[in-house]
Amino acid sequence: MSEKDRPIEQYHQPRLWGETTDPKEHSPKHFRYLVHAINPFAKIGAMAGCALDSMEGFGPEASGDQSISMYKQPERIGDRVSASMSLIDQDHTATWGSGGLIIDAPEENIVITSGADASARNNNRDLLIKQGHICGIIDPNELLNRTSQYAHNEVVALAEHEGHQLQTVGFFYKVTPKGEPVNHHLAQAMHMHADRLQLPIVEIPEPRCADSENKVHRTIRHGKEEESIIVSLDGYNFYLRGFDDTSGCSTYSMLDKDSLQACFASPCQFKKAVEFAVGMGELSDEDAQHILSGYEEADLQRKTPTAYYDKYGNFEKIEYFEGYGSEEYYISIRKTGHSARGNTIDARRFYRALLCDDQLATAGPIESPLSPADAEFVIKEAIGKLDPARAVELEKWHEDHKSVIERVWRDRVQSASRLSGQFAVRYHSIL
Image (cartoon, rainbow, N blue to C red; front, side):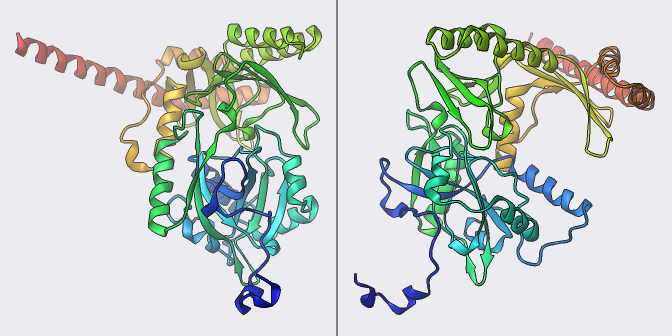
């Protein structure tokens, strides 16, 4: 169609950012989308961001409602304050979550582009614009060049600007090499929205499980001085160096490429991955020793009861971990005096289901409280690492909450006793 033959209304359409392709004509070998990924834990992050803005004196936004759920109302993305997105193509498929929306974004709405997670404050328009002036906006092609294979980039856009809004034009969900959705619940929800809104839905491969062969991946993540190293070995990805929580897996963790469950690697497995990298000529003996030393330090830290404080210096919890893989357990004593010991992977599954769809999680993760003696041991271990002033504060907190710790344990023992009695009655009735 020539320029003069185009409909008049087409001249009034804003120019879209990203040089994106049409999801209605999806080709697995050639595509480019601007996507807003949905992460089950986004509710917690959004609530924390709103609370932080409230404490810092920022009132409710008049320019949009950031609380609108994209999981429930994806067609209302233009009514929010802003949206964090990622630009993906066939060679860069890392996203913040395992499913979500495909977006058309006018160029004028874009305020931030970053080759890695930008940690944007999405619920405050003014702060986003200020951050955008500092970060600048780079060309879409350059953004993809700065994006590593295993970490998502971030593109932040105002939901509405000068009458132009972001628009949902499709949906996506991530799949394993076997074609299975990474998150079945989320994929099902995206299919339902696609049918309801009569929009296309596409499958995007999950990069963390794309390679079946054993090999070493090395990359420089933009904005990071340290090189990132991943070893793919025996069905797992081992994150040797250069990763943090924003990339999905932190350094020293291992990812099961079938289940996409991540956990802290065991000493034996991690050492095997490092030795594989040395054998492949990808690591020197000196680098290997440095990585192993860092792993040992991190492993000791996670196994040591540690007191954690909020940004205002208020005590929040004591926490540490035992075991590895599917046998990893968290031990936590919260500021309320309630304690818990539970399986890390089971807890993650529960909270993922709960935050993705409340109806999918009918019971919490299986946890058991600590006995008063065990709790006292853990608290004393944490106190031993503190400076004198905080040590005194935590000792006082312990004295003030001993009754809670004892009551929770007593309730647990009584509940177990009643349950045992019920089983005994049923057993004798059968006889």
